[in-house]
Length: 546
Image (cartoon, rainbow, N blue to C red; front, side, top):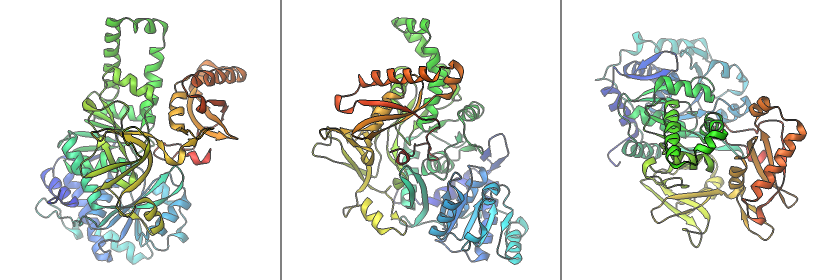
């Protein structure tokens, strides 16, 4: 990695794949690497003439798209700092991020820009549309004209492989300022240096089998580093063809895209995988005749092969593996997928590590782990016996952030004097640095005699019971209670009465308690009328319910 530079990877890749497809909007237009380079040249022409400097902050607000990707590469390739803004943030949060980050320029989706208050964009020198790079807002007609003049081939000049150049970062230069949507309130600006992005990309190139021309579907929000790195920056670094879902990614839309694009590598969050399992697989497995046949050894094997083949086809039939991250995968789903030898693996990371901490390919993955510590990183468990006693997971190395923007106290709380990042996650490791996560420090509850209770483990068990779509376990007046949002589709199909549903939940409570230790028993299940509020990464905002 010493001889590699972050942006140099893209300079080389663009030149080598000039006429190949780079980016497509699903069921829309396709841009080649050479065509993307031309747009980058025109944006750079404006940046130079407008006096934008290396290190200046430029924001991107919109859903995944080819133009989002090109804007990001143009920002980074000029030596500026990208400030990706999640499209799900409300206008006040967007105003706050733009002001706090001191962003000078904004690439925005038209519909999202229309919701902003121009009076709160005082520091922004210009706003350009992510739809077609037209001018949305500039302080004066002269500055609008400058954008229009520069964003033309006639003025900016023609891009070609022999003149395509991008400005690079040094390893500790700030590259991305990420304001994620955390599960504990409004989040901080994570300062991700070039070395972190480069380390993640090099690791992916060395451990994940993608090559030029392979196809990828990008549906995780690129304003979050998981999607940014592994559905965009890594594939684009080796000449892949990335197709972006420009609409909210429902499971139905995602599956349709997989089946049309046939991606070589798939990234996902547990929610998507679990929904596919519950809607497409579980109903078939619960049929009486199938339950009986699954107990017959020879027939069981055939049924498992059939289910596996159907699942592989659901995801396009061409993928090497599915990498799941962002939250724990339900244990029942993981166990079944392992049983049928479905090619999936589970990774672990966080924005502060840009994002990767651990990963292992599916065929050497250890069950119930979150993968093995990645290269150029160290891990330590803050307990007396890290192999058996749960403690906070600490990491340090090339992937770790510089700190939180304009927040020295939060930085000092997160990174200690020895450089260890305190992840806030609890777990253990084994003798080969496979990481086993047990929960979040802030979510851990205490039992009546001081026992540690991990609500995530209880929730995973409860979600296996009838009608439970989502749940949150918390403590009320010294007792454990579960808030449950029941499955609306199943209710619509089977139409149980209100009392019937309460009876089902009472039975669920009784049955799940048989799986729990005495000190962690649920006292009751409380039904809620609406789906739990979530972050864009689809994690429940627990702090709203606890």
